[in-house]
Length: 279
View (cartoon, rainbow, N blue to C red):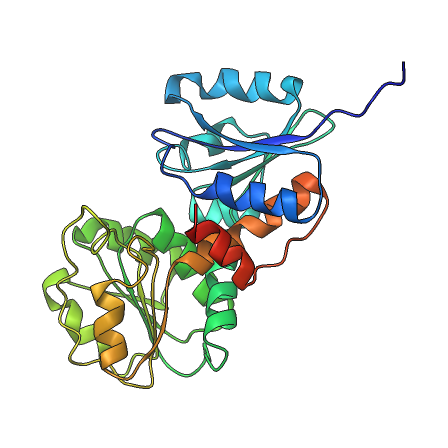
């Protein structure tokens, strides 16, 4: 009997993880490109992470996506950490290398930029300051990416000020921190505006920062994608802004991992988007 190659496995780890759209996305790509492989959700407790990293490669796993609450913890368990994952302080992608080492990376920032470039083709990072609402792990990825593409200033506000101050300390003088109660004032002259908080998500409080100071020339994006059109984006669009929803970031951040695990760079197009929305 001929020895057949192992079918590569990948998945997403988190707790909870049943809500994740990553399985629908990756399994769509596997079908689309005729690749023998499987992608599964894995609800794994923090206490079991170390054991999981030892066992899964032996079962045929080639890598994982990492979601809340493990994105920071996983860095302490990886053998190799990319520079951007170290800077952000979190990983969303693991590659199980053939030499047995676990490589941790963060593709959230590149996914964020790719989503803007695809869905707001006229977006110019050099055009003026950016405003970022929130100072969690997603905000760190966004700020690192905005600095990398040349945004001249990043105005940052978080509901709890110390987290924003910590980001100012980590990312340097381009980051200017404002109080949350005055966050609407940051919008004056801003050309890129990003909500990285969960405000406006289904089941979460509304996003209540006043948007009157928004320039109609600004590009506005929300990392929330449930609902797809948040009140934040609806108000910005009514103001004449170019708006970009958060689903594209999910799609684009997934592509590098899929390529590393399954050997094919997937296309992020409308068919991909519709497949995930239908899941």
